[in-house]
Image (cartoon, rainbow, N blue to C red):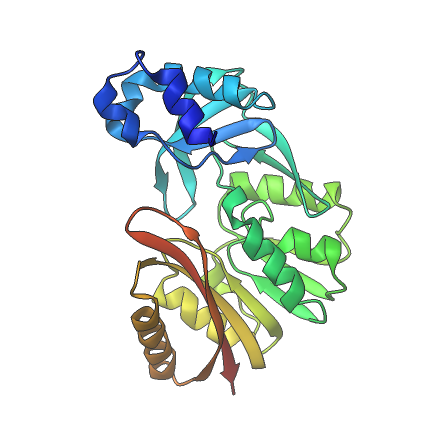
Length: 277
């Protein structure tokens, strides 16, 4: 029986039948915490849902629901549902340790496939710039598992930066990763990077895209993450390529892939574009 089927069976008779189909289908576990998205109709039954999920997932000690996210600093607004309220957890993935506060910071286990793909792409890179580093979500597995020379990890949120700095030490990659607290659009190095990571949703601003285009070296690749209406991935690609050309750069597609389904209407997509200078 699938997890959602188990959840529905556990909650039958406990919440109104008309809401059972609205129960979440994705159950991201970060360390020993489970962070879900709940529709507004389900919030009054959050404690019951959280207790049921702890029963289904014995590893889970606490359950939170995300209601919204403050976009610029990517700070989730969360509600504690059930279990033990200890939001600072230690998550392990690809030989990499992430210490993260699930109540106040964003970390998506659903991006695991993207982190794996990056390991395949950047192994021989000399310089990587991670423009939205958060706690090291994308860049730390690269530092731990590849021979990359140097990673500039930029983060604007001081609270996330605190965890980023701690995670760099925790993974013993301080010789590779240079953490920078500040606005990525003001990063002043140019033409240095083999890869520039733009891992921000719903999508980077034009100012941030231009900064990435200046930072990337000749023949380097920008990794542009965005939310796209399902079925519109190719038209979004055409829009992105046009935008890059309007900035005066020469782009060519390296690849694009769906990272995950974000909602019934939207996909999280990454476009990898080579920039020729």
